[in-house]
Image 1 (cartoon, helix red, strand yellow):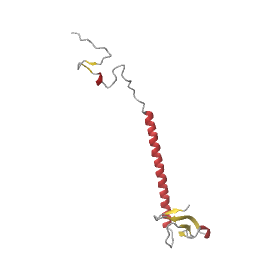
Image 2 (cartoon, one colour):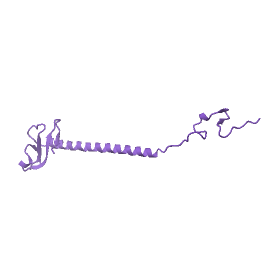
Image 3 (cartoon, rainbow, N blue to C red):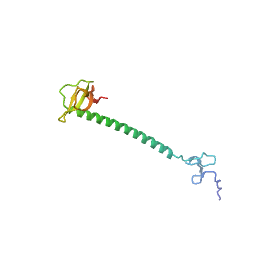
Image 4 (cartoon, rainbow, N blue to C red):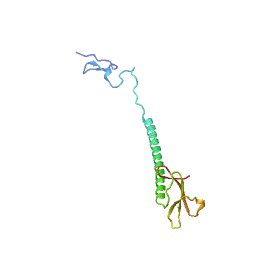
Length: 134
């Protein structure tokens, strides 16, 4: 007995003796849509570039904030280790000097009114931290 062979364009499973085109993971007829693999390299490169830019920007922001914080820390350390014999008032501007003995001291006297080495002017914030006066 000869079995009649199906044409090549017909998907027929001879083991199961059934048509199984609908079970195949790939196109099985000429009229089926073309399966193409999309090029994701461009998208990946764009995404990598965006993520790298975002992370770098955030890093630079954090670095600038850290440097600002360390500068404030140094100012506060410098002022709090200097000599002064008064209680500073919040919001007032004070001047930091170095005397003849190379000791730092805080004063209310402006730089135009004395001849000590002027180091800077600072004001006391409400949170008890010192900021450089502009």
